[in-house]
Amino acid sequence: MRDLYRFILRNHVIFLFILLEVLCLVFVFNYNNYQKSRFLNSSSRFTGAIYTRYNRISEYFRLSTVNRQLAEENARLRKLAGVPKTARLIPDTLRGIQSTAFQYSYVSAKVVSNTVNRLQNYITLNKGSKDGIKPEMGVISADGVVGMVTNVTPSFSTVMSLLNVRWNLSAKIARNNYFGTLSWDGKDYRKVYLSDIPFHVTLLTGDTVVTSGFSAVFPEGIALGTIEEISKEGGSSFYTIAVKLFLDFKSLSWVEVIENNRKNELDMILKRSSNDEGLD
Image (cartoon, rainbow, N blue to C red; front, top):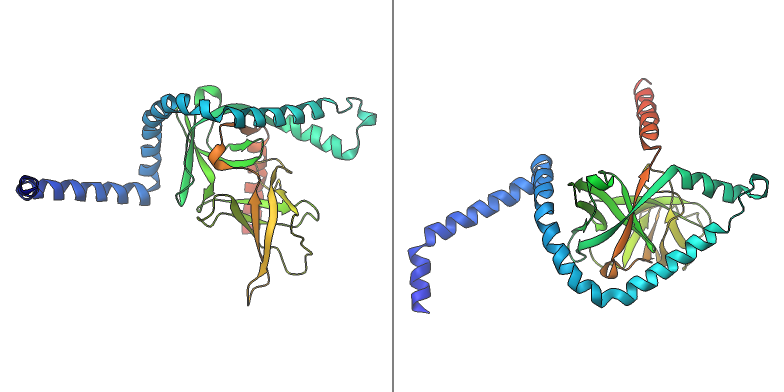
């Protein structure tokens, strides 16, 4: 033990230098978007390869969960396959689903890295730019929204998880279509919160919350979870709504990356609308 103390005292300047260098790098990457983006792009190549090897071993122990997810997804696909193809026989609601299906395309990907216990959680996928993955694409699973692609390399991509305090999602209550903002508070990975729903709206515990479709990232109607708790904060005009997620992020294995084929067109019209407002 004395030898260890002597070694530390003899080299304390070097240890202090290393510590200060690490702190500087942490500050640079956390508070500068460009450096952070470059760091994530570089690190995702290295960590992606490591996590791929590790995941090949751990995936064996999650086969039962994967099989359940595949079975549920196959059931959904079989149900959609049974939709009548004759236009006259398709109700308005089903015609909307058919139109949405053509608007979006999907790429399946495997999760090779995932965290749930940080304030800013990210997921690494085994698909990248050579597979058609691009930043700002949405990511879903059979049980709901996973997150949004932020960084891409040829073979891997990084996804900002729904479990990230810096990201929120437009969502609505399926029963009455009232919409608000869905976000995570950094605590329970099975629970998120829906805000901006006014007091005059009638809410019920167990109501289903889905995506609103008010963005170019996710289609409308993707199930997110159910209302677990409803509360009113003093001095506020809006509910605080706890939503229990359908998706268990700890068992996440396979996902679908969504491309909105009309995103550029939608972004263009939204930009023109913003410019028009600036002329008022």
